[in-house]
Image (tube, rainbow, N blue to C red; front, side):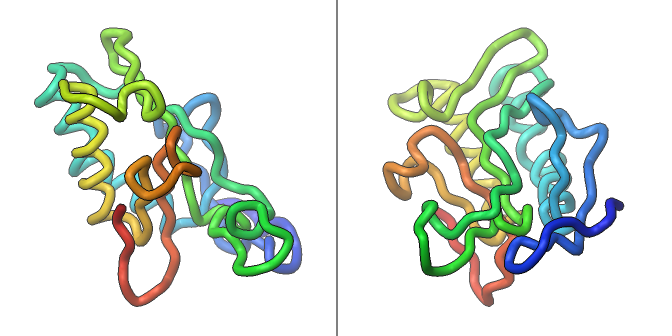
Length: 158
């Protein structure tokens, strides 16, 4: 657990860091719900799929960030992003133990093992996170998956 940080709409009361989680380039602080969802997704989807499809394990999950004090899509007004309170995670790719890299931007389109892996890890995330957005959602997500733990009454999985 970490001390609260920030102020106003970007105050983060609920903060933790998964010190042994294979995020790169670093392991950022996040909310507890994000941390729990990440662990469940890794255990139930990510690791089993990497073993099934590639016969390897994921050694690094390349992220683009967790916390950014901003509104949705960087607009000057409107709803706050879940990133504003570190309640979201953007993932750009994965590296396997054998050195194989799987990139959302480079490997999303087409047919093959990497494409299957990306689609199935996205689909598996839908059971752990409140919001899952992928390149299928819009151009803003062409290079990453967005996972968050918005407390809305229904989930979004695209």
